[in-house]
Length: 170
Image (cartoon, rainbow, N blue to C red; front, top):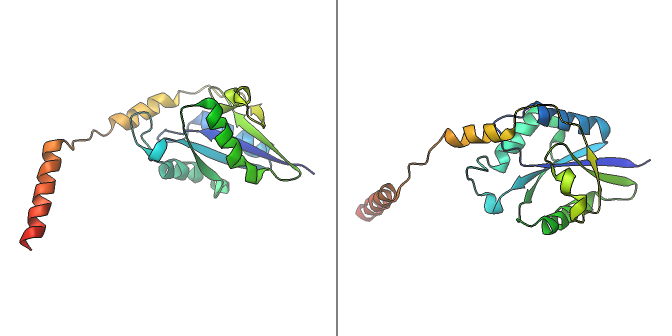
């Protein structure tokens, strides 16, 4: 019997999973024997307006809804080059590619599954029809706008000066 493994790749840069995310993951769990999620990450897990949440926060958010994915959430770094990125993903999937397994990249609208094979991916893609939902972009913007860094150079220099003077006087 062939074990079917579904691979979902996404950034999941939202404050909470929306109906489209839940539908995609639920359908993958129904249609595959095993599901893994690869979280797209910036180099060094750098936080910015487009990527306001660290991988641990996103993994926790997914596990709160889908605890059966414990130890099945991984990271993949965005390298800014689709063919290289696809090779990186394929190499991360090799340990899962055992005898009697069939790996498939699972996605929906605007997902890796739409582009993966055209950039030389060695596994097949499975498309799950989307559920109409608001874009995650709005949620990312809300997260980014909810905090504004106030750490300017004057404050930083003052903190360094105070810290160095406190240690020198002790």
